[in-house]
Length: 267
Image 1 (tube, rainbow, N blue to C red):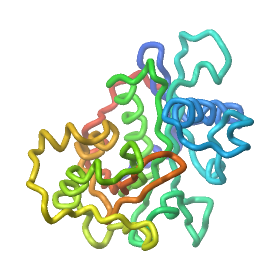
Image 2: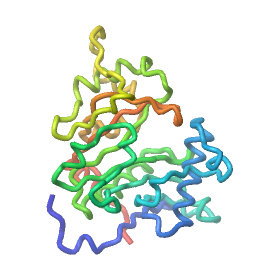
Image 3: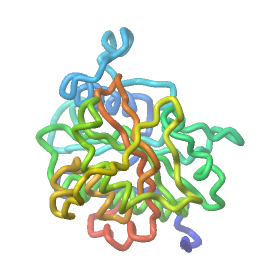
Image 4: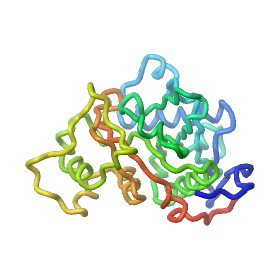
């Protein structure tokens, strides 16, 4: 992917109506992202918080300070930064890890095929939007920002864990089987669930479901990834802390910039 010579020097700041999306610029803004994540993941979705997380009312981990944090602000809200932040995503280019390049996804998957990939890679995670803002326009704005970020840093592959609700993989066996049979990543970029966490996705005795039924059976975020041309890694993983069953998304970026063309005001 070719990048304009001066593109890396440009900040990314997109606006649509009262909504503005940009990267967090200080610890206060990262704290606002962590507060929103706590609200969505722990209070709403009933993930299991640590004692520290419960005390602080924040979703925090050891990876946060290595990531860029996308924030969506509602500038119509007259309040604190925490009150204005209504959406977030975190992005990790591995720039702080030198040769080790440890990523959050490596807690669940062997991602050496991605780490060894010759082009630039980007890990996505911790995506959440406040309940009242879960609309197509909010997600369009977020993904338009990600498209600009991909161009800015010449990213060729994005990846990360995406979740199905609950910790009973059997409930999602039809969707898992369809994903495995139709969207398994090429071998050279295929993560595989860690041996001690590996859950088989392929089922031998299922009747093939239709694409329409498959789309109806998967969460909206995964549906969005699939429509952008995503693959999945080999094996699902139960995340007991977050009360989810995860798959690993592998998303080459060639379709991103063309699908999410910039049509917002740029500061």
